[in-house]
Length: 58
Image (tube, rainbow, N blue to C red; front, top):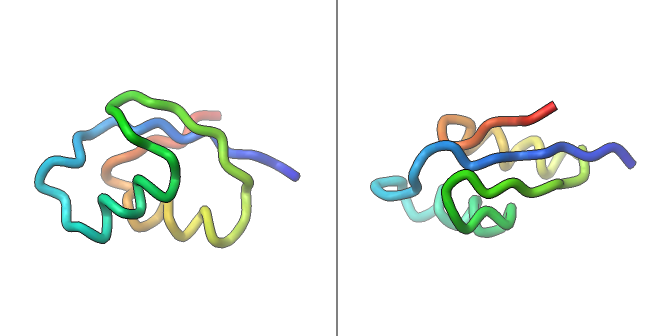
């Protein structure tokens, strides 16, 4: 299956709890940390929820 690389580019400080939990569910723990996730509807929804905190790397 295809994968997507996600990098956390902005701090989670000041973000609501649900967005912090979404970052945790994606595996993003630190600033500028990169994770590789499967490209599916669930992960796309999580990316959309925290799109202001993360960057999708090609």
